[in-house]
Length: 613
Image 1 (cartoon, helix red, strand yellow):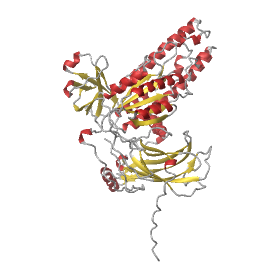
Image 2 (spheres, one colour):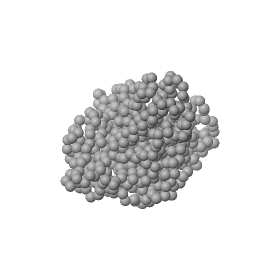
Image 3 (cartoon, rainbow, N blue to C red):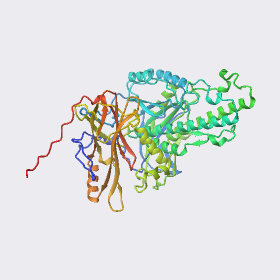
Image 4 (cartoon, rainbow, N blue to C red):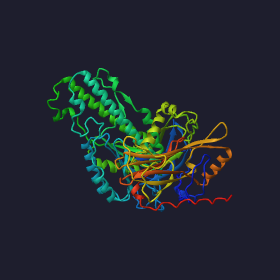
């Protein structure tokens, strides 16, 4: 359960020890809405359907057996969820002008659905078809179904936050889901004339082109997994199950050897480690992935009329094209099935009715059972734990279909990385560290989802009504294209919950942690213009650490102050973040400066009276 931050009475300054101030306790939801989770509590959502795909309702706890690595587990909580579209909204938060938070209010019950249009891996022609199919879907979507829409190119962008308003969804699909060309696809327009087909020369050229293509695919792998990483962190801050419906024209998580090349293994690549980290994040966040092949029912392009006169009569080359297409299709469908199976979703391919696939995914992912258990194996050794769910009694003979997460990696979620290990060594030591660094970088991109690992408030007000000709102290603009004045300087005042900060015990008895406070200034196209930030190193002696623990238990906060300058004559956006380095947890808020530029500057701090000598 996540706490809901209430308005802090003041903004606090973090010092070398840490300043803590009083905060009103957060309101608690009704007890029936709380799952009491601990660090060893595993949550498993199970979809049960008949052979026609219709949900099965009314199961009881005793109707289900759950095992982990073939060892029976005791089900602690059992709850059924059904698709009941709701018009209720989450708790509203009324904040003063200039005060913002990354907390996203959501209704207490129900499933959240995410539509992800993947322009990075999808030709423009297929994007247009997806857009048309989504237009058909939103016309018939049940009012009250909560949907958010995201786009992916080289970075993830939120196009519409969660809404149950059909008209809002129609407007977004109509005006924001416009086809975009991918610079990393061989055939970005979807004409069927890829780079490799245009090169009919020597084997050496074919080898070079294949390696170049492999490099582009590896980039798409990384961008895709980074996007899922960010999305998983963002959705982990929202309660309940989330259905991620992923429209893509290719699923490039593996590259298989090409037997037609002189060096077949030169183009191989694997994203196994990053894939592991990503699926682990998704399952922890209760996200089920429903991949949908945006290309619909496909035929082998080797038989297309567009290939006429381009080597079709070359027997071996023609056979290779047919074989490569079949291998590529099989590999991509395996990737789709694996992603769906690992997270408890379902893959849709070889089907032109994409609107129907969306409806089926939402219905399937909204009728499910939630099981929780504490593993009998208490060793958090990073090994893979395989989960199996089966039905008991008369249900075993009814040929019912079950979908659930297949397992998880037993990484200790509470263990911070070694504070004595340098950042450079840590980053180079594992794919997990690379994934963590990518998460931070991707989360700071303009328009990306705003992570809620750390819930916080921030007050943004003009520092003065007078334009300035110089940047605020400590600002670092882009050296290649410096911004020009006059500037408006903004005060950025943070207030975060102390309970969200990780402090690690040291041999001397102190507790240490590092917190980064950062502000990025972007133009509307996502170009970084200016930055400001500082890192606060906390090294608390035992007495101060006790005070810190008390503050965390009481729901009190910590904070910091930054200043950043923005050009007055240019439209700009502020991306404001707090980063706990030990846990790699983030909190981010993004606002346009136009929302706060007209507000009244904060009152000046009182000057203490001087003592006469």
